[in-house]
Length: 149
Image (cartoon, rainbow, N blue to C red; front, side):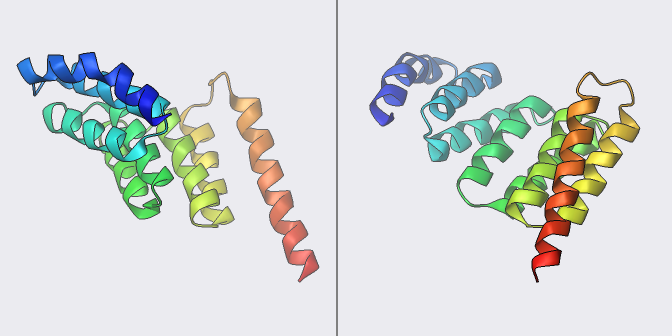
């Protein structure tokens, strides 16, 4: 995967020598590394892209996912919380916060609260039923764990 990421990123890196602060080009480079599971390099380029375009929520969410994969759960959550300052209703951001609270922090209650807030803020979202199912599943898993103790 590393060779694939480096190979696909090379033309972008060459272009970045001419345009080192091009947020879109930095993002494209980051996405190339992310696809190759080179999360450290991807995070580096997502951060540079955000330095040029700090309000880009999609880039910030991708950066957060890389931080999560690198084991920086708190850093990932901080980036997602920053995204909410630009768009407090952003569905992808709220969904990801819930996932990290659940999987990264082990905090089922916080995850459920975040997803319920997501549904409240976005009542007509197409994925409403899937989110509701996820909430029910996570609540049931918490109940099952508590019953075993």
